[in-house]
Length: 193
Image (cartoon, rainbow, N blue to C red; front, side, top):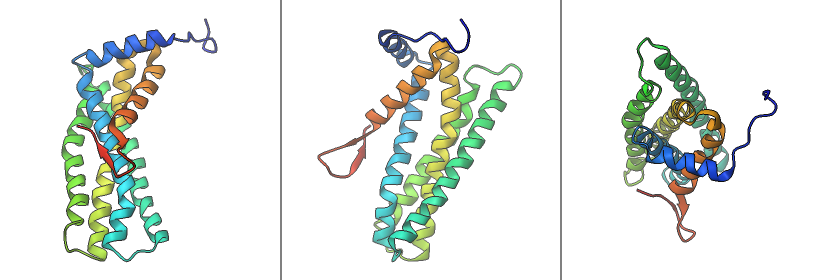
């Protein structure tokens, strides 16, 4: 079978493989961390314009331009996350989990800091340039970290899933989006525990 005729997995095979990976104690923590990080980024991007509109006098166009900062940080996070995962995996005597160790450390350090900065500004009496700076730094930390964790997580998942790595990666991305960010009664989006 050549590269153009790859085996197509049956949906039942994919679900069995996903169940096996989710119940694997070496995979589940990284999947949960990856899903949580993506959910935090999704929530930040949804709430960023609302927080900036309430705490600053920016126009909608200026608020839209603020998303370039978080987008740039996402690109830098993806690049550095991929580089760090490859560097960790190529080290002599590295464990199979080496790809996700740096991303896990980064997530546990930067996601709480970013969420605190964005959440801290809302009840505070900060206005103007200080509010913009604090919100953008917090949002950028979350976006950088979410993009940093994904390359290592998906490469580890690919290593564990074998020949159906792409299909399992897509399925876990869909499960993560579905499970982490759900509209509740048409109100604000909430992260599930």
